[in-house]
Image (cartoon, rainbow, N blue to C red):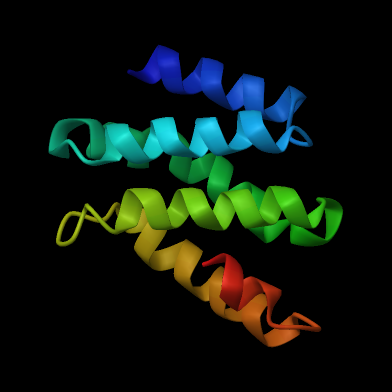
Length: 111
């Protein structure tokens, strides 16, 4: 799964403007996240990238941030009690900060 997710991240990095491809990418991650064993692996593999993207939100187009928030939601919702510490300790404060500095409510709508 780690190899598949790494390849999907690379595909997303090169095609982040392609809405159809991005929606399929998010859907694939969402499907994998439904399986507990896969979800833990997804959290391990995706957490550093998602944290990095959200911490540097000013450097990225909003579509990337929006997709990042969708990915966070896709892996956290099925995880319930098994959320990786990096996500709990880092992503939530970053998301709260994004909501506070956002000019409009687009961040709220994305997540």
